[in-house]
Image 1: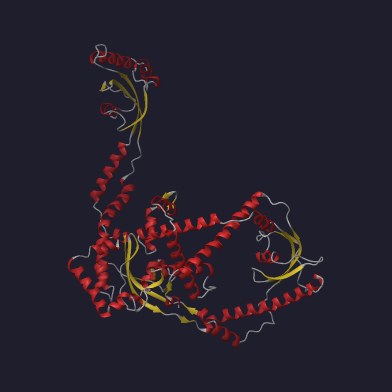
Image 2: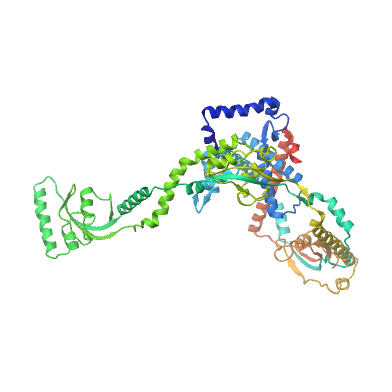
Amino acid sequence: MLQAINDRIKGWLGALVIVMITIPFAFWGIESYLGTGNKQFAAVVNGEEIPVFQFENAYSNQLARLNQQFGSQLPFSNEQIKALVLDQLIDALVLEETSYAAGYRVSDQNLTQKIATIFTRDGVFDRNYFENVVASNGMTISQYEARLRNELRVVQKQNAIVASAILPDAQVEQIAALQQQERDIRWIKFTIDTQSADIVITDQDIDDFYNANIDRFMTPERVSVEYVEITNDTLADSITVDEDKLLTMYDDYKYTVLQKEERKARHILLKTDSSEERSESVVTEKIQELQQKLESGEAFEDLARQYSEDPGSAKQGGDLGWVATGDMVKPFEEALFALNKGEVSDIVETQFGLHLIRLEDVRAPQVESFADKRDEFEQELKQEVISSMFYDISENMAVSAYENPDSLDAVVDVLNKQSEKTELFTRNTGAGIAENQEFRKAAFSPAVLQDGLNSDIIELGPDHVVVLRLLKHEPTSKKPLQEVRADIENTLRSRAAHTIVMTAAEEMKNQIIAGAAVEDVLTDDQRVEEQLTIKRTDSAKVDPMIVDTAFQMPYPQEQKPSVQVANLMSGDIAVVLLDKVTIPGEIAQDQKDAMEKQLRDDVANSEFDYVITTIKDTAEIERNTELLQ
């Protein structure tokens, strides 16, 4: 749509825009235009650039996923996340190049099928859903198709590597046996007590932690903006519909519905031709005799079975079933649809001969009232008007915002629509309209954030555009110590409590290894959990960390349990006792097959990582490290 707006800026206005764009280039010099002062790429791989906007989109999406998974306390720094995202983009580009060079191709048919699969809702391809998703990611349809085609080529290469993975049968059987191994365990739980009297957290401890981890206590950069938006819905509210047009649409609707009326008919056909015995006059006398029989009370069905010369309906008493408009030749149809239920027609002549027609029944779709259909017709009329208005209004919006970059007042006047304001939002999250990634990206763009100008017109969807400008900017800042003091104290208490309990658990472990009986080393509030037989897949039966620890422990020796300390998912600690290891006998074939598939995937992934590393070692790669700061 924005291209359409651009195409429509013609004449003196187009020339003015070109001049206004050209002047800054003249002042900046050709070096700035070419981007030699500041790198305009995230990375360059074998001469092909990864644009900064692509990196920013990928980083924003990754950060949103991590925030959803971990909340505000991310286990990675921003620098680590950015480095990971850039590496992923480089890997993807390297694979795209090598997969194409290796001859992998995706046909238009396969691409179309994949898009249809991705964007199918309720069993039907949803074109609007497809276009909205593509637009919300800042891409055109062509760009999205090119990216998806590249991804599918990479998948082809991955599948080829998976298919080529080789695994000896003996290795598969050995690992399958390990997978089916059973272990008998007990454990003693140590509960973390953060309120223990042994834990003392001083003000100095809190100050030291705060200063050493200041990155954890920063508020993200936030902005609020003023914006003016245009949607189909807002345009619809401003349109007055002609009542006469609505009534005309209702008349057309009624006519269409009535055309769908069906009639259940019977007929008697007597054929005519050029012979003397079947001349029109002779056949007319015969069918008149049948009319007299009907008038004297004989049944239409009986006469049809005896006299009708229509082989398709005579045996059924002339029954033609339900007949709609257009099913029969015109003279037959006109006569049938002129009858009332139960009536018999006069003699009807068609190219097939002479007919008597009886109307058995009538059925027609229900004609809804004008009141029930009015809203539907009104929306239809409005949509016709909107489709021709939307581009004109969007163009006026774009030009007004550009020609008056220091305020949205001109946009408000042109559109006769009030601006709205958002609450503060960050680069990665926002509420309301700020949930849209393209909206947030525009709000944090240099033109808006640093230069204080109106944004370009932003397309949030096929029928939704907006222009915004900065209201308030809150840069990243350090949270006051008092605000996070309680959280820091809780963290330090948890760490101290964990250290105390881990020390006690390690001491118990060493005592048991030294030969002490388990019962003799328990405290008053502890007990040994009842022995349990587990497999590697029994994480639902017992804490997954206990299962993981149990299968890393050495076999018990000389009738003594093997002993290890485990950190539990709950945050508590356990001393795990391994009493017995049971190795299975013969492994079932389905278990071997499942293990082979899993191992093949593992080997393939390892080989795939090796392929990427090897290719990257020989590629010319330049990273824009400024983006990772």
